[in-house]
Image (cartoon, rainbow, N blue to C red; front, side, top):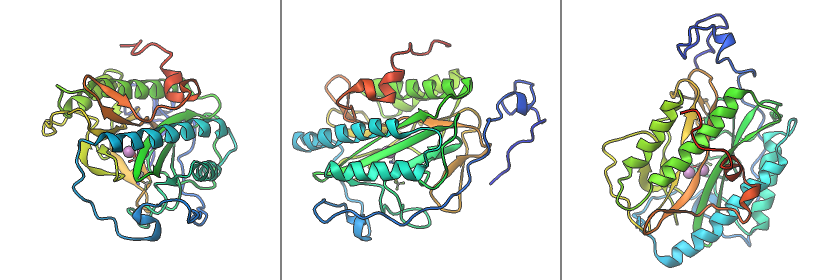
Length: 332
Ligand code: MF3
Ligand code: CO
Ligand code: CO
């Protein structure tokens, strides 16, 4: 991993100011922490194949879903969103990401659902926890560990539940105590990018119109769009073939059709959009250690737009909708 720029270097953002006076985050880089053993899931809960270590074989799942599948996705999507909103009540300075995982796991079981990340193949070893927690410069797939959250951190919680044979995938970035102005703007703009991506997800548009809308807004605000991780088709499989880039990719010229279900989950950076991987093979961090934020929804394409399947029962309790109370793009 490349080191942090030196305090007296010119800032990478081109402001002409010293790094320490400009984009230097107020916190030390996140370091790998201690990870506890995998939690158990009772036999009464239906599990995806990876729960017992079975190899995941991708199959050709139809991009356009039957109404009956959509019904199941709506139910698990709402519960994933409610769980995410509940995690927001757990987050506070001093709380470890391990404690967030504990809360997520327990609540998933109460909902009679399997936490999809648990045992999911990839990385150096299967993912050992029930959600991803990504702090400050961690772009995505952070593993919950014993690091206590600090006042001024931002933390993304990425929740996926599996029930009735389908997945619902959603995430949000939360403030820990009081955060600096740049982090606040980053998180607001990232929510707006997600919103604009969802608005571009409608019949008559192409898949690449989603990334085009997201990239235009992020870059107009001086922020970067991560290339190495993308949204994905979702349904009976956690990740199916369809790829949703969050930047403009001309090759993604598939028309958007009613009945499609996929995620939109832009990762936006204050500095470099380039990613580096920790040796665990999961934790992705920004190359310059600048902060990054993300929001994710599972959406269903309808006749004239997109329905957010990961809509909670009470949107007032959810950080995504709470931020929506503020006007979009007030600085552009
Ligand atoms: N929820 C993530 C996504 O949005 C995937 C996490 S995979 C895991 O696609 F194994 F890290 F949990
Ligand atoms: Co996803
Ligand atoms: Co996710």
